[in-house]
Amino acid sequence: MMMSEKCKQHVDSCRFCWMCHHICPIGNATGHERSTPRARALGISLVNREAIELSEIMDNIYECAGCMACVKECVTGWDPVMFTKEVRMQAAMEDKLPAYVNKLVDACLDCGNAYGKTAICDTLRAKIASHSEATDTLLFLGTDARYMACKQAVKAIEVLEKAGVRFTVLADEPASGAQLDFLVGALEETKEQMAKAAGIMNGYKTVVIYDPFDAKAIKQTYHEYGVELSAKAVTYTAFLAELVQSGALQAKKTDRRVVFQDPCQLSRDLEETEEARTVISAYAQLDEMLLHGKETVWAGNILMAQYMPDVIDLVAKRRLFNATSIGATAIVTASPAEYTALKNVKDSGVEILSIEDLILA
Image (cartoon, rainbow, N blue to C red; front, side):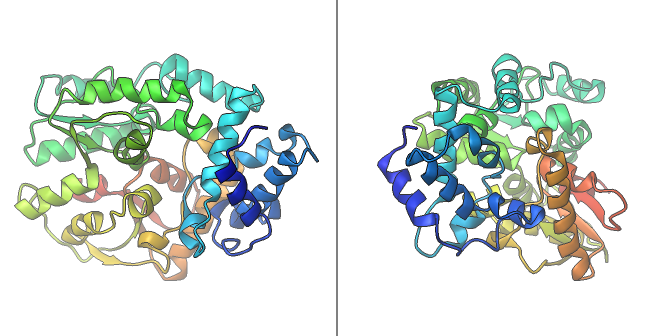
């Protein structure tokens, strides 16, 4: 397998190190040593030394959520997510992807989303149609919200309506490229999808990005891949915080007590932790989980649930356990993917809310 010297150095440094062993949400959920970053590095090093075949470790390569908890925890600066993404890219180039990953990649290329969806729900379609007029501000909903969390997408639009914002939503919104980047990394197909999306976004002064998964790609990865974005990119939570602070969203604070599930893309990748708290604190009493902000624990997503649903369910259950351990009865989310993963856990005893739910209530 072809691998850059930089990634080989990171692999050989991580393969016998236990520094991030305790923090991996997948490893903690499965209880399997093979699910940890250390074991992933060890497997890759064996492939590099031609001791085993790449196919023997590909399932393990796709257990990584890319949540960056391991990178944040490492005081010596090694990056398991970087070499995991490079192995995914190399496997794609060598036609050695697992069949279930090929199916998701093909759907991204054919339909613009990994789920193979070609239609959105009628309610969301009507909402989008009511904001088809060109304005300076584009609300970018993302594939998870449009195709897998339709009700939350509708609520995201309704919150901006409530604030009196003039904005546009595209009926034929392009894929951000975030899903392809997760699945196969910096291939030309990924960059082409990102460039196409950026070209459309550049027709607006401001792009408000609803999904943190897309926000990381648009605000960070585009630049890394040489994709030019001239529009001002703002996360949905940051945009809402401005609306609350300006008075455009007039909040009435209640005695309701909630905790916030920080999306790792906002808190770790984009270093945005206070904006969502500004919004939530205007509507409810905000408590904190033991691990929050940059220390947040990833709570699952929709994409990985397509090929490892039982594990994602365990990840979400563990995060709910973190909440109930401090007596929390309601979690507020800012990610349609985490909202869906947490909501899919039955009889948790914890109310799952999005920021939009809190505002519209």
